[in-house]
Image (cartoon, rainbow, N blue to C red; front, side):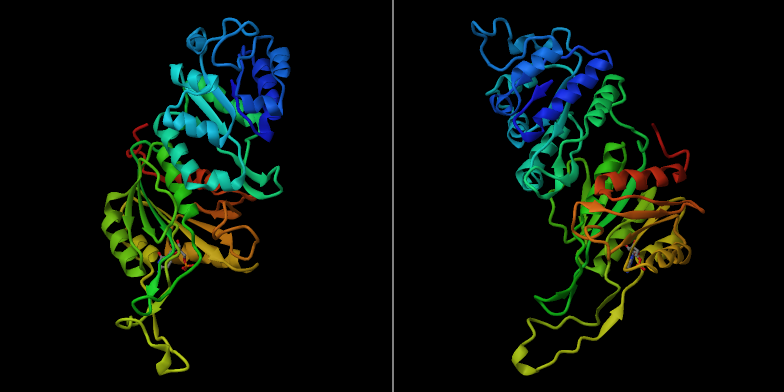
Length: 400
Ligand code: C5P
């Protein structure tokens, strides 16, 4: 078990305790920064083993060498994993004992990141996390919540029992559920922009985070994933195909083209319901009039249109509604649009729906089923939505 520097380092004592209670022997290596948060003596007292902190053995620490890391070790866990250590692991740097052990170790590796929200959301960290994933590292996603710096957001170390469960799952040879292997999932994400003139548009606040989370979750469960995306400014994930569709018309064309090749469509994009009838050439000149009236027309409801064309595809729609009557409207949408599942979110709830890392959703369908979920990360919501949709996939499709 590798421990890196961060306020969450004290929680790895709990992780160690639970691992031992489950019958595992644990050897700990710490970075120097970790030692500033928790003393190595706590880990050696609990584990009953020498704790490695230095890259080179010395009189105080004879014999601990990173090349011993394969001796009888089944799995490596890094908890908490700091942005710095994640970056070193992603680039293959071997400047600490911990990262040298990572490079030398031949077994499976589980990483549980913890850092402040800005560091976690930084594109450099996202890139490094993607690299680790592509290198086969198993990630225990950080949770959202109140962090040590007083901010609320993603970055908090997952609970010790969640981390231990991930370690157990990897050890049991079930690295992740592959229950969507062979299933082709089409996800629309982001928000369309409808041009008024060459530089202005009518748009909405969708960030694309929910669609991104759905795509990543489906990929991790073995699906073949295509994302039709409108104006999303988030790092792209490896192993996912992206098609750009910035306007409702482009989204319509791309979804129609991709739909026959998919087994499940999750229409998560906020598609404009109205667009300017015609976009002005060039930039409208404000000196010519004090008021501007833009004539708008309805766009095609892509989801309803595709539902009428469907073969055996599973269809999931979203309904971002405002206020208490919204749930009933969302139920109505499921029937009217003839889709299997509608995911309702209340745009009036603080911190839910648009832009943020979390969501509060009710999954309506299939059939009479209805599940009101508490606030959770968009990734966790995505897993629950896939759990609900997965049984509807045509039995012959899944290869797992
Ligand atoms: O009716 P409403 O726009 O609230 O329905 C939302 C659902 O319909 C979402 O799944 C959205 O992606 C989809 N939609 C669509 N085409 C539109 C507008 C919304 O497919 N023009």
